[in-house]
Length: 528
Image 1 (tube, rainbow, N blue to C red):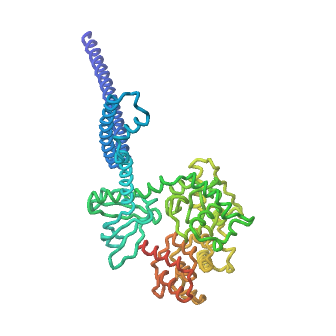
Image 2: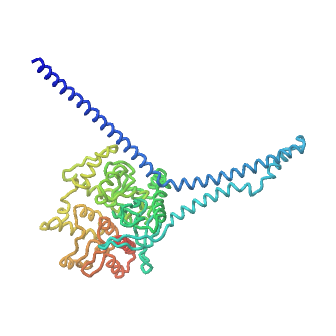
Image 3: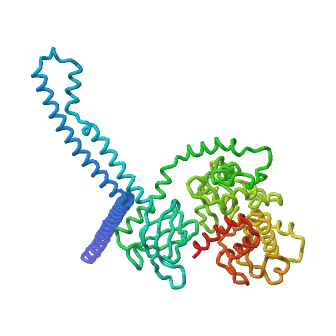
């Protein structure tokens, strides 16, 4: 019996010992796994840190090489200068030994010093610095006037690659199709375009260029790696030159100082200013846009620098960041200082002013809605909630405005919007047209056979862009193009908006259609 008790106690002891050893072993293995996980996290952080640093310093190697070459040449120049000074000093010491010091005047000392300094020696440093500046200017000029052949991937069904001649002009990229067709085709404004190398592509040496204005990507193939790097450097240099060459504070101060002198308000409403009586220069129109948009349309902050071209209002830099996050399908953001502006777009912004966008997207206040705007120092989340409600969900719009302006009560909302849009385009009423588009108007609609009989100039199959071209409505055509209308659409007679505009110009013999024709030509080439 004693042996059985000892055996049972021993079995219990062995089981407890095994359980304790297993627990300690599992604990040690778990600690090792945690330690290995921590090490991997540290290594991953170090890898990400140095990879980010490598990406930032990717384009600094040519600059470092150029500066090292300049420093080397300057060091050689200093050594030659030191040797020349030492030789001259030894000569001067020998002269002092030969002549008594009492007979030496200050004038003779100066003559002795300048005796071994020829005019060529005195001009050597200035010539070297001038040569260095000339080399820098020539390199910058080469980047600014970059041109050459690139393969461009098409947008059609085949998506074939075609060899085109690309060139830079006034911060824009253009290409020419062939020697038979030398018309310039607009690609993108390089100040806002993103350029980078596309590594995982079907072809080597491929550059991807993203145009935020047209929300389109261009795939361009260079002939060699050196040619690809040269194009990327030239395309990026355009934005860098514009961004670092301007001083925002100085330019804004000059603009605000001249606003009251050139475009004074005479007590009338802001939208009562008629742009046709003002000079048509871009500078004057930009000043007028600043004058009409003195406060941010979303938070009320003064002196907004960014414009929403599809809404006709200006916003501050904080609200513009929220609009950029919504995407170009909602808001098309453009800088008033850094971007290039065309005259049709400037005229449209001036015609809309500040109150047009406010009456459209905040017009529901009169029907019971009162939107609470974010404060000037509100965070991004507060701004995003208001901006989404205003422009995406359109909670503050007056949805009954189309019915109140209509004389008929038997038509549905889509028909009312279409008729209102046609009438607004005929009158070149951009505010009413913007309301129709913001209310969900389909820009692909066209005039039916029955409706065309009620108008003399409008034919069946005409879209709003056809009507704008026939009526010479430049600002309405600009707004329609901003919202993505196809300039290649043909009506029942097989004519595009450009064809209709040219025909109407010949019939009326008017010069007011030149800007509209030029804009349609540019959009047609860009759309292709």
